[in-house]
Image 1 (cartoon, one colour):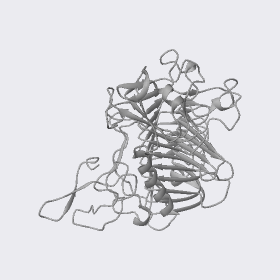
Image 2: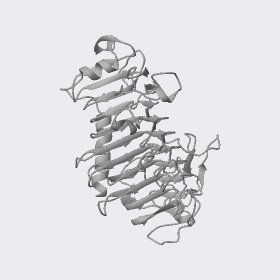
Image 3: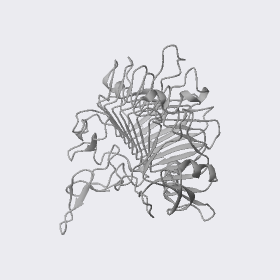
Image 4: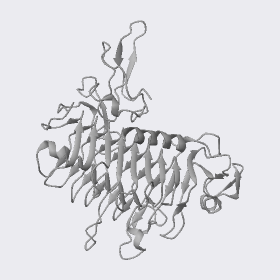
Length: 448
C-alpha cells in the first residue's frame, strides 16, 4: 500500500506539471479579452475558454483577477480540462504562480462584503487546476441557493481533480470552507499538491443541521469508502470550523498525507483541530507520513487538538504543542481508534511503539514573526539540536522531496552519522564542507 500511494503521488506531480497532450487544444486567456483564444496575441476571457474547451484541453491564464460573473450562482466550471495560471500578464512560455499571481475571486458584489459573494468560485467535475489563488467564495446558501450551495466556498468538487501550486484562502461555507469533495465512485480522488490552504471558515448556523460546520479548510465525504484524499507538500494553516476537523475533515474515505504541515487550525465544536479522519468502512483506510501538527486546537474534552484519527497508520510525524479543552497531554496531540503509531514525536507520549519519542522537537519559530499560529510565517522546520533529526524510518519516506522541495533523506549529522529520514514535514538542510567530507547545517529553507 505504501508503494502504491507514493507512486500515485509522483504520477500526479508529473501529470500536473506536464504540458497538454498532442491531441489537446491550448487556449490563451487574459482578463477581459474578447479574441479567439488561439494565442497570447489573440486571447479570450476565462469563461469563454471554459465554455469552448473540451476535456483534455489546456487553458493558460495570464496574471490578473478573474470573477465568474455577476450572480451568486456564477462559478468557473471545470470538466476535464487543465486550467493553468501563473503566466505573465503579457503572456509567455513559462508559468510562475509566485511571480505572476493569478486570482480566481468570488468577491463579485460589494468589495470586501461576503454576503453577496458567489457560492463557489470553482466547480469541478474533474480536471487539473494549477497555479491559482482561489479566494472569496461564500457557500452560505442554507434556506436558499440550492442544496449544494452550503458546501465548498472555494471549490466544490464532484469528480477526480488535481490541485497543484494553489493558495485557497479566505473562503467560507457551512461545511468545507475552502474546498468540498464528494464521491460515490471507486477510483475517484482529490489530490492536493504543493498548495496552501489558509484562513478558511466552515460555520454552522442557528437551527442548521448538526452535520454542518465541519472541515474549515477541506471537507471530503464518500459513500462506502469510495474515493481518496491525497495531500503532499501542503500547508494547512489557520482554518477554523464550528464543528470538527478545523484543517481537514475526511469521512469514510482513504487518505494519504505526506510532507504536510497543519498549524494553527481550530475545531470549536468537536474533535480534530488539525485533522479529523472518521472511518465507517473498516480498517486500512489511511496513512500519514512525515507530517507536522503544531498549535492546533480543539474545543473538545477528550483531546484531539492535533489529530482525531480512525484506522490510520501514523509514521515519521511530529505532533507537538496542540491543545484541547481537556484530556491528557498526549491525547491532545492525537486520539482515536485502530491506530498504528511508529517513529513519531508526540508530546506527552507514553504509549510505546517502535521508534516513538516525546521530546521537544525544537521548531525554528513555531509562531513566526507575527507571534500568531496559523499564518504563513510559521516556521516548524527543525533546529540543529532537534531529536527528530535522523529519527524516522526510511521505508515510509518514498516521496523524494520534503515540504520545501528539498531532498528528503540526507546525511545530516555533523560528523557523518546515519543516512536516515527526519521526522516531520521538513528535512533539516545541510551543506558539505569542501575537502573535509563532513556535513553541517545551513539556514532552513535554503535547500530547494
